[in-house]
Length: 165
Image (tube, rainbow, N blue to C red; front, side):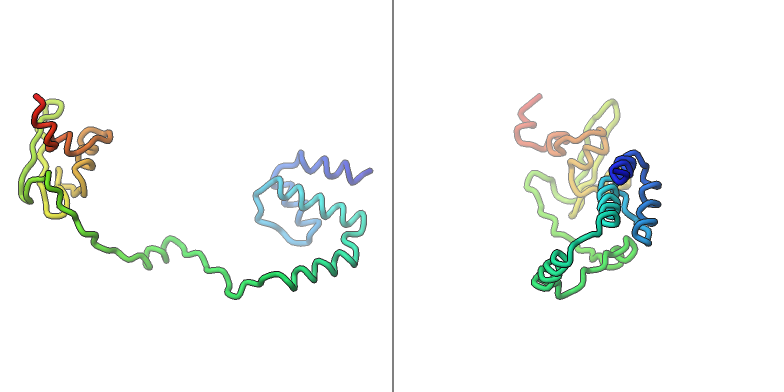
């Protein structure tokens, strides 16, 4: 009957207390942070200590299953730290597809917005606005307005926009 009280008490423990109890029962600490898992593992250990654990037949069957299981032939890859990942990253220049709605490189697009004139230089592979490079007109429009909007519409480069007043 005492084991039921111990298991019930586990649910009231905080993570630090559960880790401590785990270390007492298993003889080794854990880095686990999942409270539900810790409660289940500790409860299992308490029950196995109180009632004798698995039978010999169950242990043999588990060993058979483990022998028949597909084994991993290669160890798992080590996860790269951000520093190592940065060294392994390759930078590639993506082709810039020219849009027929754009004027030729070197053209300055100008638009009035909230009482100020916005000027953007069209480049071969992007756009320059206030000394910063942008890869799309929409990115420039977002920098200007603070919210996403279609760059062609913002700079009135859509054929439909030219017919509007």
